Length: 259
Image 1 (cartoon, rainbow, N blue to C red):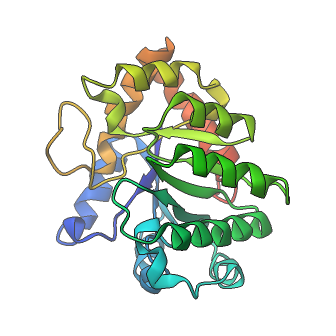
Image 2 (cartoon, helix red, strand yellow):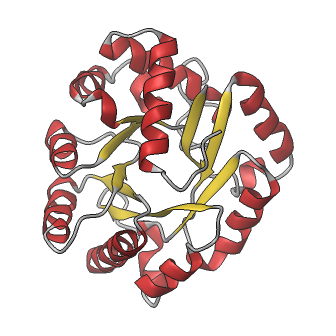
């Protein structure tokens, strides 16, 4: 049994066959999926999907690309929305200096707002970090000094320094289909050095389909491909990586009921 800890089932890519997508995941042995919020104003759509499927849960938050649109979102608002039984995480929030779709000060403000909500609720913050390793690490260290909070560095593709900083602060590291790409040797080396009790897998679907599906639309069923490569990278069997990442998921996403 595996968990897709990060996907976007509300995206238009899945609109016409969402039932089939979820069914394929379950048939493949993906027991749970977390569909991730990218805008608070569209959160009701995300929540409706989580409510429609027993095995699907969700987060609430604002992606850094959209930070400038939702600077009025408060930690208290996030906390209130997170009261719903299907909401098991805060985010995704963080910093993206690759696309820079929102001003960096807006991204940082949103990031800190989401950290405050994670601290209050005890729900894990799903962190998006791209080309912003030093600033992400600095904000995490600064905010952790104000009070601890759980978090995961999602779709990890950053450098070893951020992985080590995240783990040192108590965070988890989640790997996507990028881990399977031919040129991802360095990323696989980083994964091999992440403590086993901090590893997660995800798809980030509909993006970043793993080998052998690269270039196609991604979906939760494909998380098994990433898990297989992660197993090889750390030197364990596929069954063991499933046990490791599933146990880690329920430890971090502790609001999700485990059968």
